[in-house]
Length: 92
Image 1 (spheres, rainbow, N blue to C red):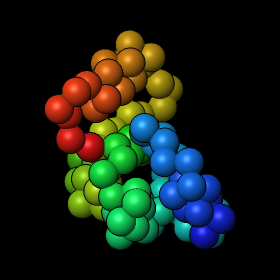
Image 2 (image 1 turned 90 degrees about the vertical axis):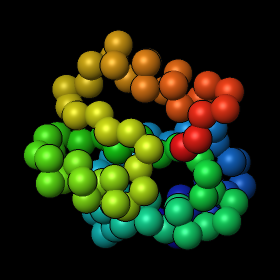
Image 3 (image 1 turned 180 degrees about the vertical axis):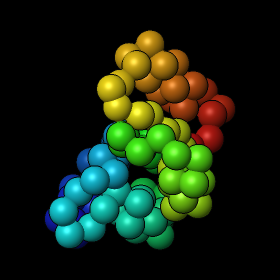
Image 4 (image 1 turned 135 degrees about the horizontal axis):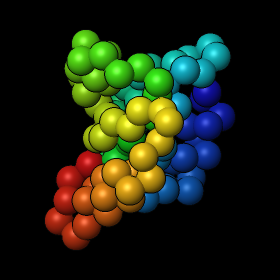
């Protein structure tokens, strides 16, 4: 995961789609690390997961995600969410 954070810090993407279920460090832990990194702190992070419970969504929000998408992905909703997060003046 450290390597992925280094790549993100080097490339400074406009937005990060974060898979929540990953080996070693899950997406919530990775999002917390992103929020701790000065260079990455303000990049919007969208959680992508099969977990739909309100408690899990709250945990994702507490970790610092900017948006939440459940699988299977509704691409219309995804497009609206990304457009809103990348709109001028939006805050991730």
